[in-house]
Length: 335
Image 1 (cartoon, rainbow, N blue to C red):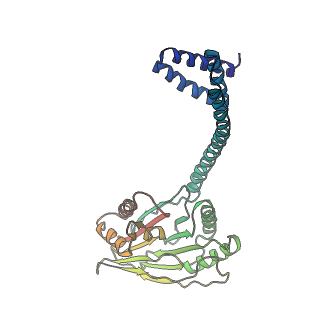
Image 2 (tube, one colour; image 1 turned 60 degrees about the vertical axis):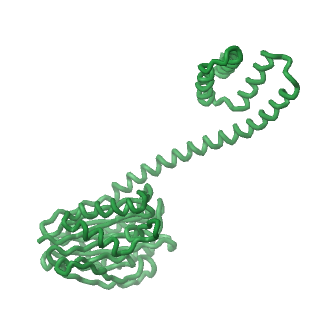
Image 3 (cartoon, one colour; image 1 turned 45 degrees about the vertical axis):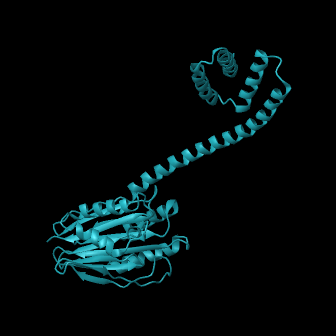
């Protein structure tokens, strides 16, 4: 006998056994049989037919109204069975897609990975957490032949796979430009790449800074990126790290202004994506001074400990559910 016939016979045995003694153990056997039926792709309407057949065998003189009720149940189960099979097919496709996205997210993490430099003049902390599987944020460090530390942070206005693919392109464009100019030149070169290769409906913000350990100055330019902060350790106050510039890819021939800032010992440069300042609680978006208070509370810690503690606190305020990609970088002069 084939598996379908075996299952039908088993079902009939279960019905007869339960009608004889109403043993709950028999009901458990029915549960096990339902799993076997799914494994062997037995449709709900087939099980209804089994049930009708066995009931007629047990009591041939069934009332006509009861037999007609089986016709209604059979029609209902035919529709239900079709919907169930469609649901199972969609679940399978969804699982396949989820697996592919997880693989893509792992590849993105590898492709966009960067090492935080270890120096005797800067303590550097960085954290970047995607709101979903794949991130639209990007940060990168590079140490040039003169010992200067370059730091880039970018954000695609959008989420998901398109944003992640765009960030991968930015990363490889950055790799080709390493050591090839000051921050404003880097942004002008990237702007041409983005203008030629990215959908005009996608917008990219970026900040690029170059820290010179000889004169302890940070040279930086911004392409419409979220303003960072500067912490003056002598005055014990935070100010916005002002920088103005057009988003990448808007106009091909865009010039970016370059700023500079002298960094004193124990001062901080704080760079971030808008997922940090746009942290949303039940009361609305947090204020920028909420963020600076959190940083100030952790000033006695290392830069990496500060960014981790700030992230954990903002994650808690959002009920542990990020609404946007979160990237926070802190540079602290230590020598």
